[in-house]
Image (tube, rainbow, N blue to C red; front, side, top):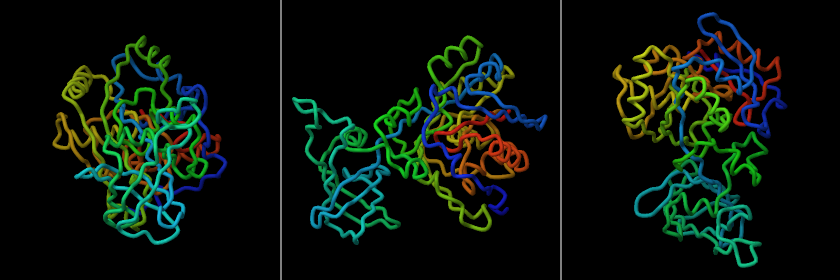
Length: 360
């Protein structure tokens, strides 16, 4: 039960800093669990790697521009924050970082980025919106604060204007570029709420969906708003003792019906990303798949009996993380270790903007 089972060394140059173009040109390592074989393909090959009747399950969450940059009004010192979620009474939960000690009652001024979604001035050069202010109301621990924003619009609306895309720190040290506003989203993203992308879905294109449709392969959607805890490494000697984070998700009645129909005709349910797996397995914990809505803290690690997923598309994950544990539970620890060592030897690109695996 040691987390060392999912540890590995990765040459830094294999951490993808930019996505490939077009999206479906990413490489795809196909892992066959029954034959215990590995094969090299590209993501655009997906329609011929699946079978007619198979059903893809996609996470339609949309990443909000959750990273905020500003300064402390009292001292002028630099401040950085990450929106985590909306609280009651019009307040937000924010992860704050500043050189000096922050105090309750302080006011933070946040300026909109040049590439943000604020209305433009008449000249069209700079955003016309005034600075957003955040009043620090209550310290919540571990760098988190309850804050009261000066604007009362929905967080997704405010963040679209004032926020930066929250790239993980291994991509350009978290510094987003204007093109990341589109590239760090799936082409089917629809429901704002995530602070990290469901990265297995970043490889899909409209043309690929057309090819899938032509091949008799369908798709449906679930929602899981990916939280900051997805990047948290396992630090306990026994991975079973790791405190699992909770994320909000939903499986609709329509999607549940499509998935039950797929399995009823003997076809495969192909989860796109560990986030889709988490929704499906939460909704099927009693053995039958039912519509579900709420927060899940389901923690999947070896050994685990999957009830709703037959195949998995996933990116390559950081070592000693719950995401990699989930993949190891699905494919087997030994086969996952072999796949990762092969991917490193073949110079696959890793993590959010990197390549993918299809596990059959």
